[in-house]
Amino acid sequence: MTHRPPSSGGGGEYEIERLADGTYDVTASAESYLAQTMEGVVVADTTVTPGIDFMLERVTGRINGSVF
Image (cartoon, rainbow, N blue to C red; front, side, top):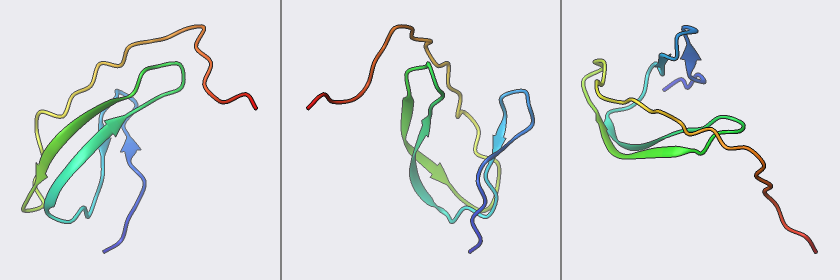
């Protein structure tokens, strides 16, 4: 199996080719937005998997990390 990073058509649509059949947890994330995960996405028979849609919430003034 060959793995390629997801590609985008610029309109927010992504495609991942040659993904093995199975059940996946799909996470969408972007800088300055809260990540979202859709669990239990079933991929089968090299077809398009519908219904995977995310609306990320923008955050401002958030700092991640640790202070030692």
